[in-house]
Image 1 (tube, one colour):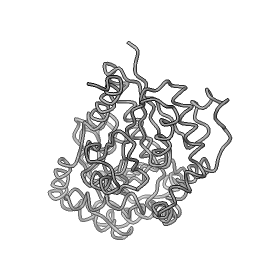
Image 2 (cartoon, helix red, strand yellow):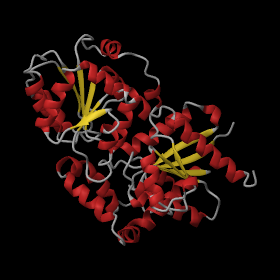
Image 3 (cartoon, helix red, strand yellow):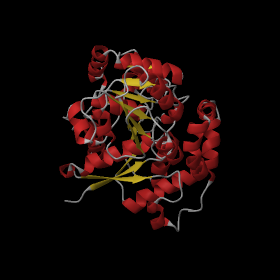
Length: 399
């Protein structure tokens, strides 16, 4: 059976967009009966392999946007305020037009080339910087190509996500849906499905103790998972250091700390060279974050939408640090107001709150129970259903 090809537009400005696109790809490949094949493409960089097939029509020299994408990780780790400034400046009137004047033609031509190279029958965007270019590419192709946008932010929606020509929008929460409506998107075009997660997050059946044993940890001792997104952001060094000093000096020396540093190799090296007061596992990039979350009693992290969604899917309470200005700000009240976690302002407060959470297992258990109404384990399947529906409708417009 010939599969319907769907192009998924993503990028590596943070790990969230790529995580969503790969979740959708994995969901489609794991269900061949759907008859759809999803193909990832990053139009914000010049080196994506799909462009090699269309070198005659698309420039492949690195553009300014390539360098901006490459700087994202360093900026959110070292100067998150700079990202916040850029995020809010971009929302000002006229800035969207300036961006498209500088980069729109390049990004649009790359998307057109990818559509032709893959013979795509639909396009899905999981990134606000490519949404308008996706619409422009369809217009220039001159055919009925279904477009779907997956908003990868749980609560806060940047204006650049909104384009009235997109056929369907998918959002993680009702708050995000309301924000899109406020930006002019018709309610009938918006589906609240949750953010798509990799299939592994819907298949966890082990308890925390069972998973600790599987991972080679002591099943009887509490475990805390520290994360800072794919770039190891969120002042991870300060937070883990403070928690090591406070929590383990109060009779909790056996508490296991697991620290995932992501792509931040200097941070990982510094942690590995440090002397810890108790058992500590230091990791870089991992493919089994769902297992480490399952093994943990609490997840300490910056409030990225994907990490929050993944923790909620596993049913683990969250201790959230200061948000990246802009798209993460609304995630803290979303979690805390629903009783699924707590938030800290600095490393000292993080250590005190974590100590209190570990000292009260009953309250920690209750927080875990409050994650259940907030999670969407079937989000990936529902998004793929919508993609199929759009493709079928484009083929049979009268149905």
